Image 1 (cartoon, rainbow, N blue to C red):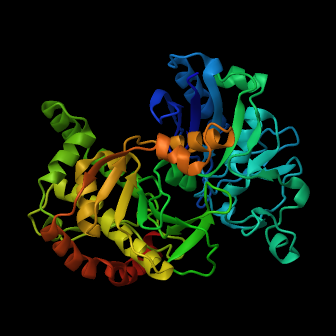
Image 2: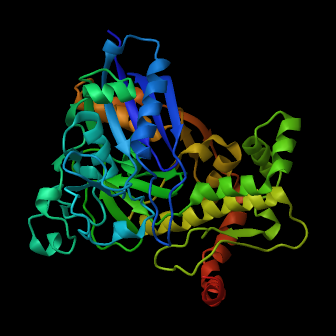
Image 3: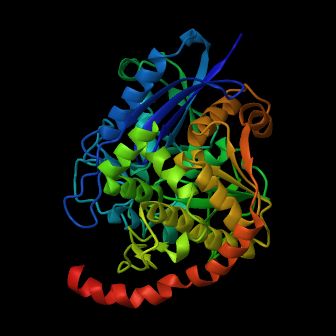
Length: 475
């Protein structure tokens, strides 16, 4: 009998739900955009009302409505949600307040019990798990940050020196399970909300980046994955719980006791690309309409005609400043009259590649490894110009996966392995993950970008003082 697996990918901008067959082919999809974050004051960033659960329901209903098979053939669902969120729940599991986004300053601070109605503190995955199954269980692999977690055992720490600074009593925490374990079955109420079959097993995955890495086939240390999302990160994998590194940090992986190593990244990375597209406005929309292209396709086609290096135009991507340098701002440097809208657009793409080259290199140096291939995931991976720039900057082949929703596929893989549809993770990855087109570096462009990188890697050292001074005026 043909089997199907569902991957829920609750991301920063939308919830995507995909039903895959056991060869990794998507057979039905649903997507629901998230509402804009509620930001009533500086540092406060919340998901309005019950938006995460609402979006999961809408995306699931759309996917199930388009599913051509028998729902009885669906083996289970893997749940992947945004990491670093914090959900405060009442005793019945309902929200005591809106879910705190990963961009909310409070998630990096100890929990303060100021609302007596709060009985549980959990992640976005814990909250959605409860809404789906009625259980107070969660994956251990989505607890990085301000949580009392033992990163060696993947269980709650028993050390008072770890627990007390976090401020969350043990009785307020969820039960932890490993990726691949069953969290529970879909309740009747959740089935009505989502269209999923009652009793369908819901399987634990990990944090969104680790699940995406699995869905992209990142299994060896010679591969680097660049995830082109709202937060852009580069990643590789290993079995050591590396502590104290300066060029990367160690996160939980999607396989029990495997770790995901993540370089420093770019906050509001692909958001900046969308921001620029919208800023260029109707002229881009109309240009695309005349050419029979979407605005994104029109900009990508134009950027492909701009020479490597953008005639000296460089972008600084701090549209959302890093927490250790809150004075930083985004900038374009190097105008001299040769540049137009496509230069602006390509300079942002090049800045993404140059920044991640620098940060992935720092990670590789500390790990004592090198990268022979770059896997690229996320919406930006669909643009040939972006793929070519990454290959040229890194000087190694760049590939994209055949299925663009890496997190959704990774969630489905976790479900398939946990439910015994595959003998193990490597068998599941071999069966379900396919590599798409490969882009090989142009040597002349790689040489130019290597020279440009010598300038670009120091660029914020020169702009920092300007932005420190202007921050005193403009904030």
